View 1 (cartoon, rainbow, N blue to C red):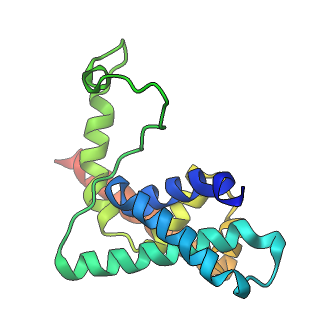
View 2: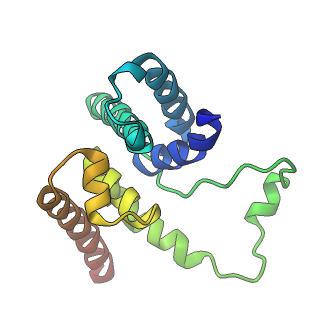
Length: 169
């Protein structure tokens, strides 16, 4: 029951930090790790934050290994799973919306996003994608609020500079 309740959130967090190709593995490994380490959970009311911290730590390890090997990340929002999937070509058809802006934004932000640390990616995901306050994101990551603010500000600065540089070119 706990796994079913948290799997989607863990997967989305992993996608936001490491990208879709590795997110399923990270989420599954995190669930197994949580099962093994459940005895180390000090407060049952913090179970969700504890699980998310396990995901962030697994993502950190993966990104550290990627940087050593020089593997790049693809930044995109995962499609929600459906019991009745649409044909692959359907996603590529323009259904009345202009997707060119999203493609341009992705091309600009992807290299900047790769330059961010796992902690910065986690803060961006928790704060902007999951709607956590900065305090809640800091508590989830077990860092001081001031550190969270600083990391978030630095990450946003990197992304802003990438956008400004793209506009100039």
